[in-house]
Length: 294
Image (cartoon, rainbow, N blue to C red; front, side, top):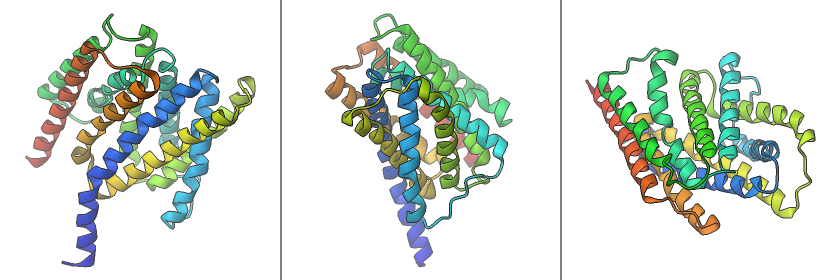
């Protein structure tokens, strides 16, 4: 076995681990944002997430021995993708003002279903009857999550659903530009543009953070950088269909963080909804694998 083949096998074996690590870190970032949102404006919290993401992202270029390219190829798509991701972050952080972290993540799991529904329009992909059926069943699972017995206010769930919709579009746009720029350059463009946009708004919402506030903002940026770093490492060894099921690891750390820090635990109807949404997503994944194999 050649050295290259051995390295490829190791990367493939480690890919699921990297994806799980990334998905365990994302809710921690959201949880720190939920802590911040009670003392600072939404604009300032989102600014802190991207500003410190930018600062902690730069060392990755040294680690990967890559020269930064601030203006990537397909600039129009990159700009749209960045604005969509910024909208996703703002909507989800806003949702956490009203609802528990785990409940927000439960709604967010409809993103793969929304992505499947939008694929024919954005990527011109065909979606068969089976996958449309899974999308409809998956969306019905959100009715359990949005039930009157659920914790929090309905506006929070609507914001989380909006965030999931933006995230689904972000994933589709990311798929379209994967060959245009390196992952690090794409992340750099997103971080720079988002920081610039939010810095223009920041003077109207600025409150001088205390030490805890600065540390929490640093944590949101660092956790964002680390999660993206692990996602990059995961996709070096595995494709999207292989790694997609591991994305549901988010509910583990989201639930634990919510219970430990906020004392929130999803009720029975929320867990029923989560099960339906996850099962629908996994069914779509299975159909995609069969389609690729045929």
